Amino acid sequence: EAPGREHLPVGQRYDFYNSNPPTSGPHGPAVDWGVHDQPVPKEALVHGMEHGGVAILYDCSAGVPLDDAQCRELSDQLAALVNSNLSNRKLVLVVPYAGLEHHIALTAWRTLDTLDQFDEGRVQAFIDAYERLFNPEGL
Image (tube, rainbow, N blue to C red; front, side):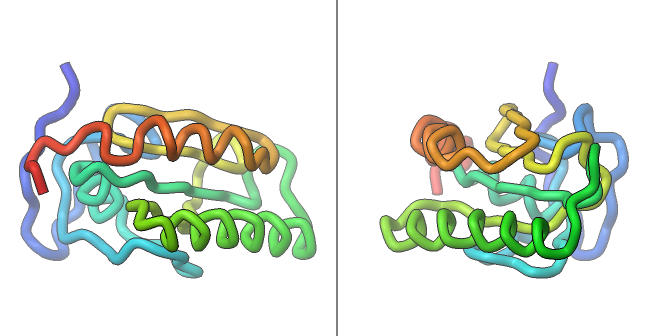
């Protein structure tokens, strides 16, 4: 049984998700769709997923760490893909996220896929398959 959909008060943390990164469970206020260059609370990412969004997370220090140039290339590739999806009115965001086992994690409600290197086709296929697929609040 996946965690429920409780809404947390602003600022409240939740540390009992059944996956890292989380794909369901209690959540706090959402953040804007788009490209984030600073981490956002995982509670906010879950809120976005509850509304049918896809959160793309990356961690340049996961596994075999990327150097600065490789990390910048990865973040630029992900940002370009997210921006093209935003222009198509997709609910998607990208954000750095510490503590991943792989360089990239693709998350949607109760769904997680991981990659060790950028694969535009695979990331786009995930967005196409899961964006707005699950929207329990009907928003």
